[in-house]
Length: 236
Image (cartoon, rainbow, N blue to C red; front, side, top):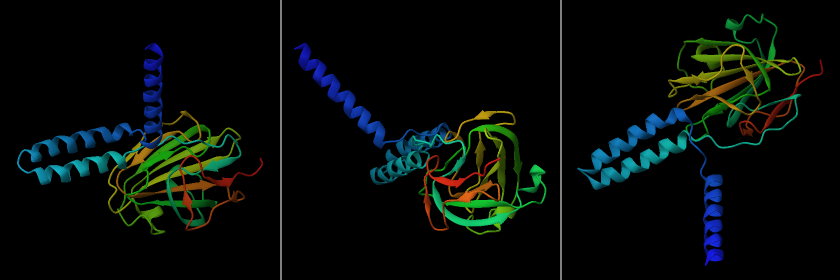
């Protein structure tokens, strides 16, 4: 009897582990939205079962949008990993955001465009320390446009890696995205691959690395936040 009970318990635990691997956890910022959608669904269902079904589907989609899947990040300290899931839209040389005061020496900018179907949490590209966090209001142009890097609302994080490389990651709002969330501050120690922020409903993330870095991706390539290596950083 005890053996059967242990077997059943083990099977249930295994099923739960499999489910957790398939259904990613949700970012805390999404809980109020999911709760609001769920309450609205319960209210409308009292008047229309069909509307209740639509509301339930919408609630499920909101929960899916705020998903925060676990990722396995490369342990190398000489690479920069993708700060977001999405598609590489541009690889160009560009001056880093002016609000950082880094001067007018160009860096290599790798831009990742996120649709509403992508995971929208942002991840730290390198382990190290946060030098500066700067928020700048702006426009809400389509995030896939090159000029969105200059004109759109953005939040910029300047990092110094454990090897001493200067790296900049920028969260950029888009046509639909109207809220940028950032959980790091000046002086924080951070680890590559860890979630540090979120952009709600369609956006773009720019990564600036030293000019002589070896870029390993091209425009049109898909990235996995916290896992895809975007560039090998130069020796110092």
